[in-house]
Image (cartoon, rainbow, N blue to C red; front, side):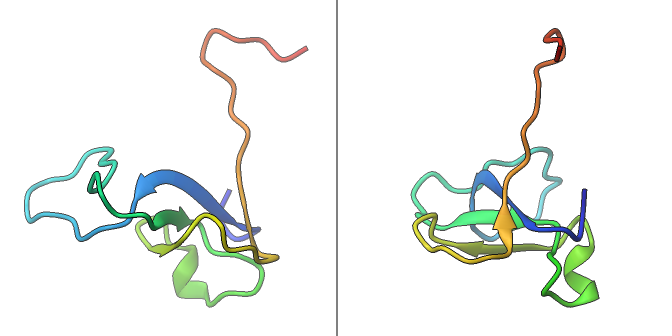
Length: 77
């Protein structure tokens, strides 16, 4: 799913702690949100899964998007 559009995440942007992070949602107070995955207009280094960028959710660009996901017990018909 990397490289088409940046994927907005619900995580808030912040510096990770030095301990192992597993599915961290980030700090509870920052207004900036994370986006990952790179886009058609970005550099190749941004397509790496660990790379993340941030911005406020009210900004509008042509290269971020979102991914629709279905729950594990849902069936798409």
